[in-house]
Image (cartoon, rainbow, N blue to C red; front, top):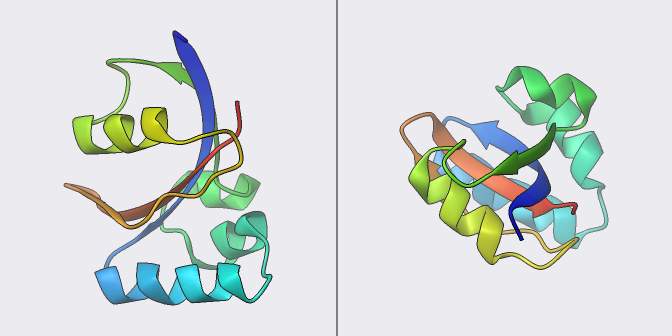
Length: 90
């Protein structure tokens, strides 16, 4: 597949991302957590990044996003921007 869709939550510290994984496990929605905690401007829209292809995102993010199944949420992904949780949408 050449294009996928994803949402993400960006935080500064790994412990914050781990806390968010716990909240997801308690039933809090990914979108709600993105709005409340993401440092990325996309957080206001529930973390939605739209669609993208290979070569458009930094390598660790891209590798993790393309490895996910639709609706699956990644573990913590570290990039030069911070720590991400990624949910594939398409």
